[in-house]
Image 1 (cartoon, rainbow, N blue to C red):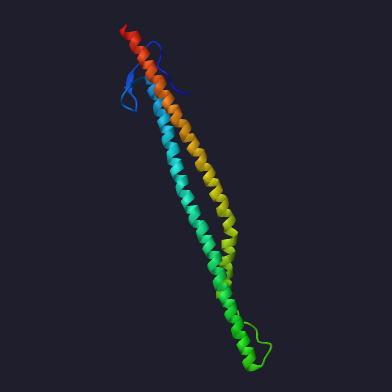
Image 2 (cartoon, one colour; image 1 turned 120 degrees about the horizontal axis):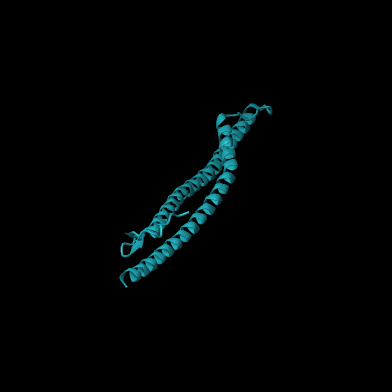
Amino acid sequence: MFAATPKESPPAQTKNSTGNTKLPADYQCRLDDCEKILARHHFVRDGLQRSLNWTKVNIGFDTTLVVLGGYFGWQNYITANQEASFLRSVTGNPHIRRIFTPFTLFSLMGVLLGIFSFPVDVAALSTVQNQIQMQDQAIQNGEATRESIIREGTSAAASIKEVLFT
């Protein structure tokens, strides 16, 4: 998975990201790969966090559609019912029906849209939260691996110094 330096060549010394210890080239290569993977996990987690925020906004929008559509639809229904009742009493005609308006239909469509899209947004919210937890766990594992690489590389560099200078 990681390329190591050949045993015949002397280990190339490079600085690690902490800047205080020089690591052999193979450890530095492993450290660079680990840091690239960690950066990718952070990037994915940031995207998931933005998705989580938008999912919460969508849930609020769906709830607003249901509440406002239901309220205005009910108000329109009550008003139309009162108008029909008034016309029946004034004219004496019991066959007068309520007048259908497009506003009632739009209110009903808003309510239905909110009701049918709410479970989808809740499922998306749950999925995004699970993915964020998985990315957090991957980041923690990557940090532990990074520290392990630095620790092993530092001890390898120290043992190489002992061998070379004794």
